[in-house]
Length: 412
Image (tube, rainbow, N blue to C red):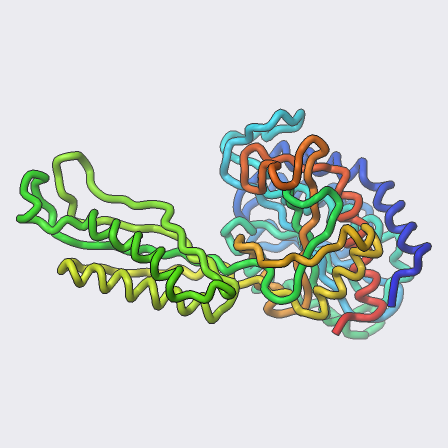
């Protein structure tokens, strides 16, 4: 079932009508970025922007999360639309008029655009409330950048919606999220079936030897070369034991050892991340890391401890939902601009927790600035990243169309 062409054009126009205020909100959020799960200023901006709309808004207590529910004019299921709100801990280095006013914080991953677009979609859909068969749940989520905000909101009862006023149930049957990227042509939509983003776990390897004088290494047991050998062996382990078509990335980001130049330390600590696009490889690479670290250390008669910290799971798009998302997006942005990603992205997302409970899909929205090339534009998480704000019109329209089409006939 396709959207009526008249409705498609109308949604694009309605999105255009709210674009200016969407840009204003986005710039206000960009100017005052906040980190983690406690975002009081951001939440107040969102609450002010939603004021006057026919929404039931719940302010979560464990985080600054907001759940806003739009009850349609007729009974039906609920569709969830997500927008994340938190920023990153880095110093902005752009020439924007609304650059971050907070030293050491920046919206470098587009979450300000996600939040603003979700507010824009709430306005468009609120104006169509009478024709909506069911509910729309707008999930304004903090703490995506490593703080697990989605899991906090789920645990606080995000999906436990009360019965409608008419006594009918309205279970959440679909969940969708847009993520802005500077490395996709502006206004394009991209997604794929199955794994779309990786898991992200942390590893901590501590090698323990014996400290001593730098002039007498034979009397000590230097953990530093052992740690270096482990780092090298991990890369060989990845390329020689992990299926290239079910990949993993093991990155050592930090090695800590010693206090001065003439002392052999007792310990060396290796810290890094592990990314995978399947639970099978996620488990296998941990086993490999443990085997390598223990084996290398044993060969040098050193002790070792290995700790893993679970991060976000693999983000897996439901096959039917991904096809549905591309279909709807193609109607809004044009078939040429709704594309299938050939491979997963090795970044991680806590929308994965939502998709573990509800079938749905994560999509990417292109936002390459006019003066840049998608292949060379500063990427997300760069302190120089910029986005084409005009792309948010497509984002608002796609969010709105996704909700209307899902509720009219949910994908299978």
